[in-house]
Length: 249
Ligand SMILES: [Zn+2]
Ligand SMILES: [Zn+2]
Image (tube, rainbow, N blue to C red; front, side):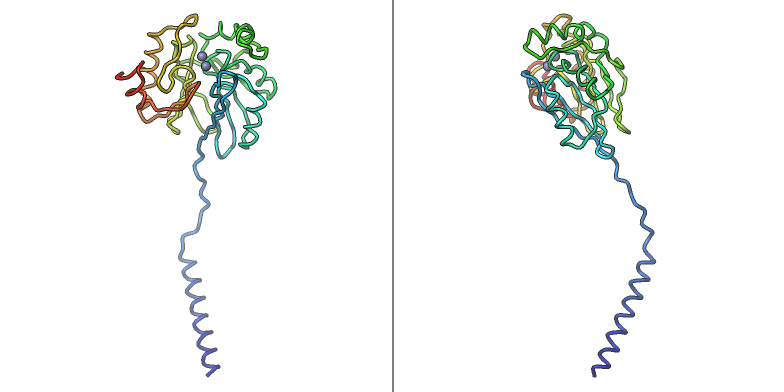
């Protein structure tokens, strides 16, 4: 009886092993697939003005760009380290002190290229030391962009490309960075949740600002979320309904 049981069990096991082998052989060969890389970002408020500095990175190469390093460099560098990303580029929306005061210092410390803003902000760059003193910032130096930006340019991070739109009004050389892939726009001080950028600074222009918002931001789509220079994120669709300065446009 035991022998029969042993024999039967063995036979069953053997046939099972053969079936499994045949099944495995019938499976298509597995080719390792590479998941598409994605962009991510983290926003870190810096300076007494709580300016939203953003670190944008590719999750596969860990290459990162930093948008508007206005100050608090130790915090920004520590955040990049914690995220496990390598800062490789500085992108500047406009040269107001809260957005750009620490640009040259960061470029020197990490050997990074400075990309942006548009040449219209040269006088704000020249005025950084005075603005820093006026607003109680640590001493700031003017910087020299490695590359100026203009409307229609692109910036890249590994395989990822963001579009550059020139959005004058708050400052004449203000640019924004738009990722169609993430459906995110880094808009500096052009637009805020419930408000718009100030236009009472030298060379500010209210009509230009409204045109920038309606002609250059809205076409990015109502479902695009924007990261403003200050305060919480929102979407263009929400602002087109609720923002008292641009509702109905
Ligand atoms: Zn500003
Ligand atoms: Zn600002």
